[in-house]
Image (cartoon, rainbow, N blue to C red; front, side, top):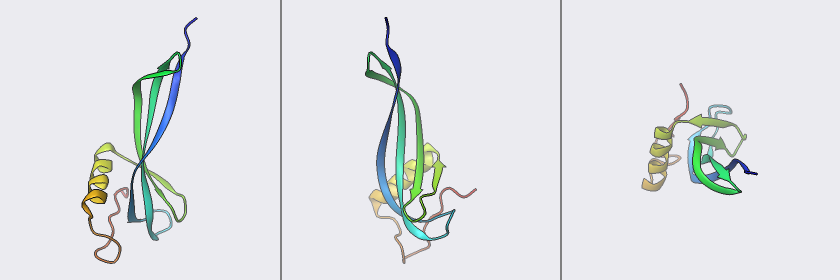
Length: 95
């Protein structure tokens, strides 16, 4: 008998101050990475899918972002990009 399946992992990459597309408030947003891995006998072997999202800490709204946008947001968080009160915060997920 072979036991296989998937398991999800959630990683918090950064916390940024952005203007929420849902509530319109400048609030902290968490940048998260969700990785689903294929498992064999309960051992995770390789990633099946990777998804990125930001979540507003004020209203709880979650917005999907692309991998490229996630890299830019993470670089902004590490590089100390424009914060609240300096310039208008970025709105990465408005289309």
